[in-house]
Length: 399
Image (cartoon, rainbow, N blue to C red; front, side, top):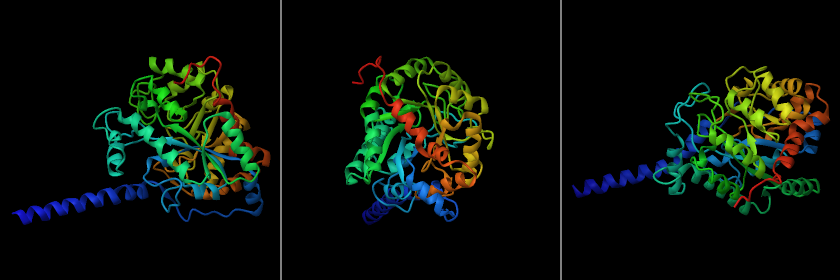
């Protein structure tokens, strides 16, 4: 009997080691895929233009996964080497803290959570496991710590930006030939506040400078486009929107319900971002913006980041992304469209961040002027970040 127990214990230990070692890797490989070779024909003219551009991607979910950003990887869509290969000047890294089981674009409950098992499988800090304490807040704080560790390990190749001056210095250093890529922290949904408005200051101190109001379910801030009720802002949401604007936290309306979008547009005093998504005019899925919403976004001065995956643009090709961009420009204007890849967001794309010159090629082939391509690939996002990260004079101390 004793021998049997020893053998059983050993088998359980081996199984546990296998789970912790292999399951997170296998999960990511199955969820963040590249369709085909991931490489597209790019003309010499497009390559030359791409090298001159300031490129900004307003949404990537790489922090969710176990692999470090500063190390090269054959998984997913983003790492530092690939950001450099793609000439990306600044990548917004989002903190995903909770996703519902059976996640879909139509209707999701807030009662389940896929991230708990991932947090345990990746052997994240125990306070992120949901066994006790504010797990969602702690998951975001862990993501912030992961980004800080990547910055520290990068030999100055990765730099976290928090202020307009940080952004300006980053672009100046890159223009001068310095090998550096910017990183900005964002949050995919404000459920990580755990219902406590004081946690906004906690996240601000951790470096968060962009925050999506919702993700795939309604929360205590606002309704989601994919939630059960799809309501607008809650009382807490109406209270926090001006606080975020005052502090220099950019409001992200990706995933927000139509009611939330309309209500924020009525009260917003600063430009907002729709960090990743598409437009119904080229891809009529539930998550994409209507023409009227594009016009409201333009009136607000905001920017939509057009994605690369099929549910955003209806095909995982650079041509589909270019088609959505051109349509959004037609409705909202050239100053209000950018890039929002949703790389590493459990998406299948046609290329990774090392090969986003395929988008430059598609825009150039479609006949867009180089100056307009420069705005789309990063100029518009640069304007939004530089202006939006500055606290207003009415801001309360973030401490």
